[in-house]
Image (cartoon, rainbow, N blue to C red; front, side, top):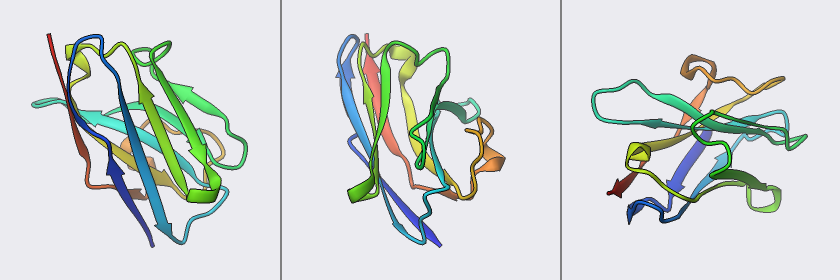
Length: 125
């Protein structure tokens, strides 16, 4: 089992920044990938960005490119998401998730094995 705890959500004005963290504990693996997803009210959960632990390879949704940066801290088993130039459409609950055996970074929710509880991000105009 892997436990995930997100932190760092909050409310900011458009153009502001937030840094989310996802701390993993339990049976983590270097073959894992961590993905960040978000879900706005009334919408499906969507992929934002992901990283493979062993290689550091990353993948970004088009909406995140140039504004968001994912990074990992292997020593702390933590994945961070730096979000800059936030827009109102970035509002939603942000979830981190782990794919235990990742060869590539998956962008669909069903490919992930473990999920955190989510953290709210609200961007006002």
